Image (cartoon, rainbow, N blue to C red):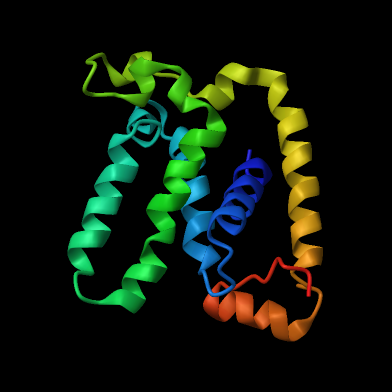
Length: 160
């Protein structure tokens, strides 16, 4: 599942921040990193709990103290990771969401994406449709806007 997480992360950031200068590239990476981590087996439990995005956020904030432009760019990564937790439903299982604070083994923690089975198909289709709609609205069929997205990660979803 990729479209669901990319679309919901981009749409959420647009609705909350309404910032056309926001760098969406690391946001997208953060939203899909836990999916890629799911291929690693039990180690993915770290990516499906609060510990990973909180740790990444702490590292970004500490490493970029006093350097606002790079901080603004790098904050997309933990934001994407937090949004992945929201849109995967990880928060519905305390054992997974609060691992390791509630104890338990990483082997006991399954990805909610795997648990949903075929219910992933409608979510992925909805994500694809949302993504196509947002890309059209952002005007990424225009070469200059596409270049701006590749170079700076900017998307103007206001539809102007």
